[in-house]
Image 1: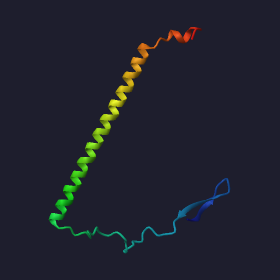
Image 2 (image 1 turned 45 degrees about the vertical axis):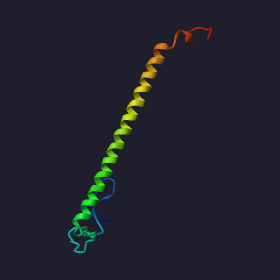
Image 3 (image 1 turned 90 degrees about the vertical axis):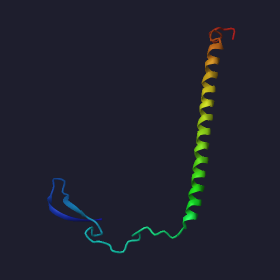
Image 4 (image 1 turned 90 degrees about the horizontal axis):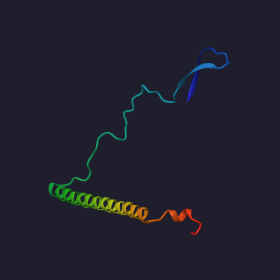
Length: 101
């Protein structure tokens, strides 16, 4: 980045400067790499229908897998909480305070 000095010096002896970039923002570039989306696959109607069917089956499998993982994690969490509550009610904490332990 370039700086051009304008104005007068300030108390700390540095000029007030304005920033200039290396490129001109007013210039329009006519050659861009991404102009329009071009579909190079050229699928036929029946091929696209088969592709859609495969995608829906894959999405259905993924949804089912996510539900199973969520259900298993909920069950494990509940078992841990229930186990902790059972341990809390059955453990005799007075043993920790006695010197016989």
